[in-house]
Image (cartoon, rainbow, N blue to C red; front, side, top):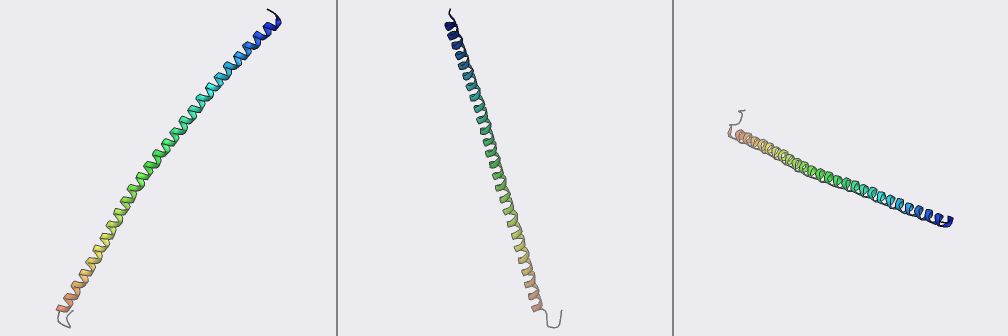
Length: 102
């Protein structure tokens, strides 16, 4: 084997080794990229779930707030009605009593 053939053989082996290393680097890069995309997907899903849960909680709180507000309004109106009825009763009682009697 001549020096030239040995050199060509050595260059061919180096080229083959570089191609193998490049293939390994590419495979590792693809694995890292997939892991990154998987993490990003998991983060998006968690965020979506968290937003949905917050939305449900907010809706429940709004319903509860509305119910409390309605209850307070009804209680207020009932008090006002009671006061009006008591006032009307006093007026009727005052009309029935003879003048000068308190």
